Length: 132
Image (cartoon, rainbow, N blue to C red):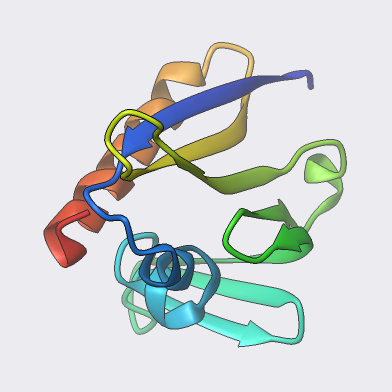
């Protein structure tokens, strides 16, 4: 199944590269906004959504590339994801001096709006948890 690239920009209300990087690249940071629980084992992040004792989803993603204070690129584990990735990138705005989060993901044909909605919900959680 062919997947289409999705790009989302979100202005962050921070000039602190260290704080933002921790939200994008550590289990503790990602658990504040991306899923209910995140565990790291080597270069594998395991994300859990929901309550592990009832309805839940667990997915693992490998870090395939990263540059500190710039970007981290992941690939979901599984044959259907071998040609895709998802990336969280920090860009500094020349106008405000604040950082902008650039998200790259891939959506199956006809599901772009769903993927964008999921990321928007995650970004709302980031803002609620951190003010970013």
